[in-house]
Amino acid sequence: MKKTKKALSALAAGAVLLAALGGSATAAGSAAEEKLKALIDAGIISGDLKGNLNLGDNITRAQLAVIMVRAFGLETEAKSPVQTSSFTDVAPGSWYSGYISSAKELIEENGYTLGTGNGKFNPNGNITSAEAVALLCKFLDIKPDSSTTDWASAYVKAAMEKGILDANSAKGISKTKAATRETVFTYANTAFGAVKDENGKTVYEKLKEGVGSGVYNKKENGTAP
Image (tube, rainbow, N blue to C red; front, top):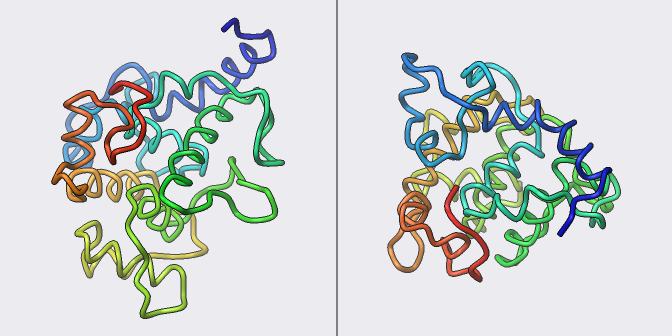
């Protein structure tokens, strides 16, 4: 399908933001980046155009959607901006619209909803550590702990049971403070290597097999990034 001038413009406008997750090369050497090697090797993150992961910066909700789409091998189709958006604050044709649309489909297949309520997604808002944990659990079909009514605590407990968080990292979870890229990358890296589907496969293992969205027995829609 031909991209419209508007879509091409949207892609160009988002190139700098996307580069923070998927630029040309990665800087080597730091201990933090070494810990994220699996995430980098899978093509889910790769630094900005200068090879920097900018781990101390914040990460937006749209950028987390990109991470999830890449983890499920769906970036090829998600790169194209959509012209009809399900969220009132996700402009049709915007660089992240295709990613958010694909992320919405993925999360709904697990029986969850994506968004902040009232038809909004808040794509440019910085994500908190509690939101990141909750979204990772939803994407990986990890049910929240039913022993608490607090949504953050429910997902934190569930993440701990699945090995995504340990007692120490769980202490720093916040519902209000923006999380750093390093924090979110670390959660994702651990989750993609620890959480197994009903066939005993992790996200990383499925990506190596190149089975696209079949990571969790979803319909086949893409290839590994």
